[in-house]
Length: 316
Image (cartoon, rainbow, N blue to C red):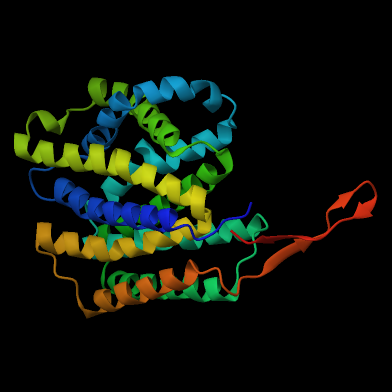
């Protein structure tokens, strides 16, 4: 499928990456400290409000969703729904904001590009260079932290890497399913509440009942409205207009937003390596989303036994 660098797609990618970068800091704020939310609390706050608000969208989209492969729906739910948030929340309970910013959104475009290449997508040398810089940015932040850490921090890193793999699956499934941004957000939110809700209410002790109303409101607004509705819709729009790999590359801007959010909300000051990694990541995004110099797929189109003019498609 042919994709171009739509200005609307670029704006949507920037919006989604900024919100999700900030969500890392907000989630870290919620799950850290003595009195804190649990990962399940964050997940319910993330999806309960969108599930309710988008219920009319889900009802209209249900006939179309039933035509989508169950495997693609499972990838959407796993990489954009409650499983993803539960794993991220568990990882952020022990890993720092800057590390999470590099590990989680930073590695998603690499995973997406690898899967896309295995599925036959051609990746230009310019985009390869951009992805390499993204990998360098991730390594600049993560490797020193892993070298000096151990135990719980290492477990947090592994959980965040697992979450990145799930997010990559979500990105690919979103592109291949063909469903719209609002449909995807409605399905993921409702599916998450339906799957997690009974366990949350019957077998867990909801922390939201004991937390200050202000803390609950902050998490509900940012998790439910910004992360639960605005960011998924913006990201789905970016995937539709830019392609899965290019849209995922915008996620590498999230480490910068995560670092700024961690400093503003938690007082976590990123070190020099983290700041260098953010700069490298931004340059990598610029290269990974370029179309100039990309290889072209050219194949002859036949009709009635005669070869017509070659069709040219540029790699997504």
